[in-house]
Structure formats: structure tokens, C-alpha cells
Length: 630
Image (cartoon, rainbow, N blue to C red):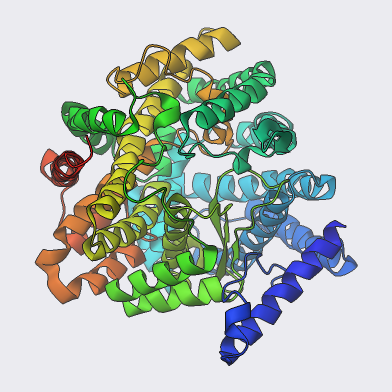
């Protein structure tokens, strides 16, 4: 059945793609322009086919061979080092392209069919090969660590192939500072497959199997978490969905607490041996300085109270005394009726038109990605929750995963993921090791795409009701990044600190989450309006390879908001300058990338306050427009 569904989706995508190009007046009224299922079979054979097993076996052999070669790399001070390393790095580029391709391919299939045991097994097989990649990385990083700065710089400049990937080699040397001795690293990589990564995969499986029972038209319907939304206009419906979801997630709370304890405990064991704290690795992952992160959070904390009038006004518009967690996504009951349903085709056309007005290159890219089957948006059971964009460097394409539910919020998510995809598109011709940009800059590209969509929609809006709804969506984003993400950061920081002294109970995780929410949201919600079980449902806490999968979102949001506020000063030059910024993200550290292309100093609060000024202006506009309805 699963293979049949995949074939049907592929044929449907190809059929729609062909017909949409005909644009025949008798055909177009009866079909969608944009397919809702992605095309994966044009990238690699389906995992159930023997041809795919051949590809996987070939990759496994190449990776194993490369790992053995890495064991024999000569010291960079030796006479034959430059030729040996240049040849080895060329091999790395080829094998790592395949690594990304296969990981993305397996991840896409597993996300689209979360209960498929074969897809889960494939992810496990690829996970079991990760120690070989770790072995290669360890040998590169420790090989560079053993030389002086002068020797490393001279070595990189000694061969054109090494010089081409100079930034990658320099970052590898930085990463070496976070490595244990070689044999310990290799052992840790082996143990992580069934340890840290195993707990992460367990969480993914639990989420894929979880069903939430909701009442619809007098019947109890079992839905995947990604199918349950909290943007219904009736508060009673939102409450029922919220409590049904909370009940379902709490049924696996103890197992999730075990997973979180063991994921964080594994990390802390490593950090203790390295003599570093739990933030040093996430900061290096994002190629940024601690002072930059501190400056950003300090600026936000000092001014986030600008959002309180938004909460107060929205509560009045909703006819409630105080907001609660479950009201954050509630639509405004204003205008001639509820916000009209937004069909996927219409959302795609609106996104493409908006992108075109900002940059024809961005618009053209969006059209290709949406039309050619790069997106999986179908609203069906059995999909994983959330959304993502993942790259296929060999074919120079990306794929987007989400569930589209005919809402403006879904359209924003689509624009967000297309922003990621465009980022990869800009870097598609760079060496694979220079296509790897940190998460904080990745989230800048995605939230910038959302900002382009939101601002142009607002400028084109004609009625007060439409403007107010658009502002409500923009300000709910501000709440998400300045408050929701902040509460996740505070929670993760605090449970890592407590985990140093032993495992935390399910109840303690609940307490820490409640405290973090109340602090991050400035105690803005009703006494019974919080969500202590949020940590169970938020998959970001369980990603094995990315601790603190939170602050990069706020960083990207604030950076993109600041950049958008600067667009007028650059005039028609801005889209090209923005593309230069995206191109630099794979080959510069964060602060240098921003300063060299856009002239911004991230260590100073002035830039962060530019974004906060934009938010303050939106709150003022929101409260003024709302006077017509309250």
C-alpha cells in the first residue's frame, strides 16, 4: 500500500506538472496548478526497490573506504601532506554529497509515512553508519589541531583544492577544541548510535504512533499531532482540542522524560570531560560568540513588555478576560465573518507573486519548487508533526515537508520553508562543505521570506479587518520568537544545569516548564492558562545532534526583521545584497558574515533594537485599529 501511494503521488505530480505547462483554457479550471505530494522517485529509487539497496551498499563501501583513508592521513607538516590531503578532501566532497542525499531521502520517506517500519529501519541503518562519518571528522579535526596556526595557514594555502575549502578546514580546527582524545571520540560515536541517537529515534517513533482523539461532527476522530490545530474561532473547540492533545501527550510523558534525561545526560558526560559548559557546543554549532547571544537576549528581555498591550487588546477582541496558551493562535472574530478558507493553489500563487515583487529570482525559484513537486503538504493521517526543508546536493534540489490546513498560518509556514529552500539554491554550486550554514543563519533566510510575505500583504490590504488580521499574525510571530522560544531556552538551560546532579522526574520537568513560561511571557496569561506539558510535545528538545534547538530561531527572526527594516536604505540594491549575505553564510562565521555583507555589528544592542522598534510600531498600529471593534 505504501509503495502504491508513493507511485500514485509521483505519477500525479508528473501529470499535474505536464498539464500545468499546457495552460489550456479547458483544462485549467478543473485542476490544481501545484501538486500537494512531493516527487521523491526522480531523485533515487524507492527504498523498497533493489536498485536502492545497490545505491546504499555502494555508499556504505565508499564511506568505509574513506574512513580507513582518514586513519592514514599524514601530519600536515610532512612533505607529502598537501597532495594526500587534497586527494582525500576531494573524496570527502563526493561521499558527503551522498551522505546528505541519502539522509534527506530516508528522512523524507519516514516523515511522510511515520508508521512505516521499513523507513524507520532505513533511518536506523544510516544512523549506524554515522560513526564512520564521525571517525573521518575526528581524524580531520585532530590532524589540524596538532599543528600551529602558522603551519595550518601555510598548509591551506599550499594547494588550490585546500585553499578552495579553507573556511571548512579552519572551522574543523575550531571544532577540534570540542573533541575528546581520538579513541574516546570513536568509542563515543559508536555508543551514541544506541545511546543518545537511539533515544531520539525512540521519541520520533512515539510521536509517529501517537493519536489524538478529537470530536468532529459528533464523532471521535483519531488524528496525528500535526493534524490538530488550535486556530479554531470557537474557544470551546480550541479547549477540547488542547485538552485532548495534552491528555494524549501525557500518556507518553514518563518515556519522554527518560529520553530527555538520557539525551542531556549523554551530552553532559562529554562536556564534563572536555571542561566546557552546556552552551559552548551550541554556540560553536551556530558559529557565533557568546557575547552576541547575550546581547540579543538582553535587548529582548529589556523590551519584550511592548507585547503586553497586544495580549490585552487581543483578549478584548476575543471576548475573554485574559489570554491563555490555547488562545495564542485564535483567529480574530472581526469583519463580515471568519477568515475565508485559503486553498493551497491560491496560497502558492500569492507566495510566488509576493516573492516576485521583492526579487524576480526568488519568485522564479518559488514557482519551480512549488510546481515541480518539491513540496509535501497533503493533510492526511500518518505524517510526522512539524515542517522542514531538506537538501539534495547531488541533484541541486530541496524538498519541503509540512501539512497545509487551508489557513494563512500554513501559507506563512510554506513561505518560511521556501526561504530555507532558496538559501540552499543560492549555495547549490558551492562545494558541499561550503553549503553547510549554521542554524541561526538558516532561520534568518526562512523568517525573512515570511517577513516579505507579511509586509507586502499588509501594504496591499484595503480593509481594517484584513489589516488587523495580518498584524495579529505578525505579532503572534513576535510572541513566538521573543517569548515562546525564550521559554524553551530557559527550560533547556535549567534542566541541563539540574541534570548535572542526577535525573529529573516527569513532575520536575513540568515545574521547570511552567516557571520558564511564566518568566518568558511576563506572567501575561490567566492562572490556569499555561501549558506545563509543552516539553513533551516539542520535538526540538529531542534532536540528538542539535542541543539548544531554540535560540537560533529568535536570532534568525530578529536578524531578518532588522535587515528588512534596512531594505529602504539600500534601495534597489537590497535583493542583490541579501543574496550576497546568503552566499556568505557557508564560508564565514556569523558576525563576519553579517558585517561584511550588510555592515551590521551584532555585538551592539542598536541593531537588535531596530527590530524591536518594528514590533513596537506593529503593536501600536494593532491597538489603534482594534478601537473600531472593542
